[in-house]
Amino acid sequence: MVLQQYPPPAEGAEGPDTEEQNDDHRLGVYGWRKRCLYLLVLLLLSTLLVNIALTIWILGVTCLNTEGMGQLRITSDRVRLDGVSEFLFSLYAQEIHSKQDTSLLIHSESQNVTLQACNGEGGVLGSLNLGPQSMESVGQHFEVMTSTGKLLFSAGTEQVVVGADKLTITGSDGAQCEHSIETSLVRAEHSMDLRLEAPTRSLHLDAPKGVHIKAVSGSGQAVSSMDISLLSMDGVLILDAERVQLPRLPLSGEGEKGSPGEQLYEVCVCPDGRLYLSKAGHTSTCHDNSHNC
Image (cartoon, rainbow, N blue to C red; front, side, top):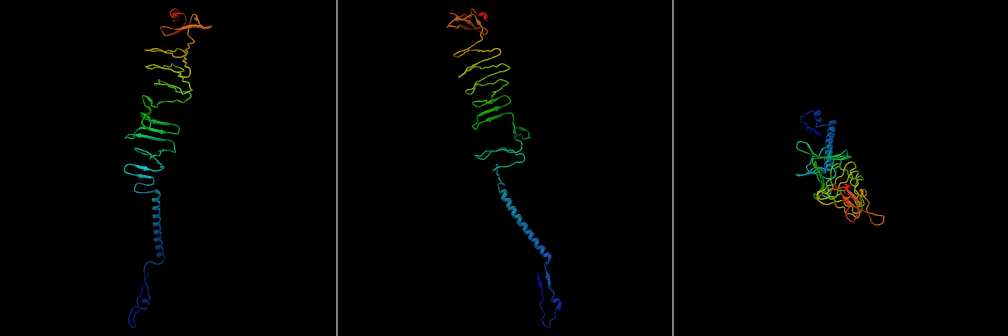
């Protein structure tokens, strides 16, 4: 507020009228306009303080810095996320790995987790789908390796390879194969029986250098509803046991008397491989009873 007053004139001097001398000349904003101006300035100052406080709070919450924000760190060669991160849409990356001595967890709260490998045109070359009830892998070849690079399992369009030292099947019904199996050893667990069965077809055991069937602590049985053929192309057929029983061989006459109540026979072989029993004598009697062939 500026008040401008004129000094009173000297005695006898001429000057403005007395009414004009008492009149004040005011310059500025007065009244309600002045109060509104102060209120506007106070509102702007309050808004400025609130904006500064919100900016500082956002910077503190998001941990915004020169390398990124929050748990995200962006460098020249990688992007690093610390802690748990959530992705709403697809994530494209060349390599994903965890920190040292920390496991990598990929978790989905909806249905499944899908990993896909695509070409430059967007076509899917291979995928791994982990669903609520199954796991599906799509690709030309599937391999399971150890940390040292040893092959444990391999599956392709032509063959399936199990590279472990031992394949154990724990199912009560064993393993069912529609076609052939190639292996060097088939054995049962301790105190368990080994059974090779073909319920509706025939069972073939072939090997280029021989087939060995061995029962360490039990007995071995071969049962067939039709014929049992033992064929050696270049070698001999060995039945190595303390006791070999062929209970249904045809008999030819009565054997020689041995110990009381026992009859002695010898086993004869026909040219076609069939076996029959012939009565034992001082010499072989197979030729005398060859009509059984």
